[in-house]
Amino acid sequence: MAAIQYEIVETIAVLSESPKGWTKELNLVSWNGRDPKYDLRDWAPDKEKMGKGVTLTSEELYSLKEALNEMD
Image (cartoon, rainbow, N blue to C red):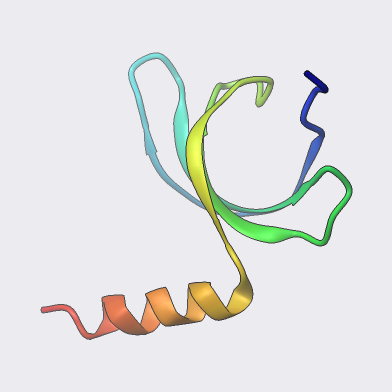
């Protein structure tokens, strides 16, 4: 299986940090040389390992933002 290549283009927010130093982050990430997408996942302190996450296009992120703004 080929290694996944990624580049964190921009760190937008660090939402939390575990006692072991892993952080839950919203980043703009380019996966395998493609255009960057918004990405929410856990990252190891050295950014060499990552947890499962979700990637969102700009349109999906905007829709999520709108939905969150409507919450009480």
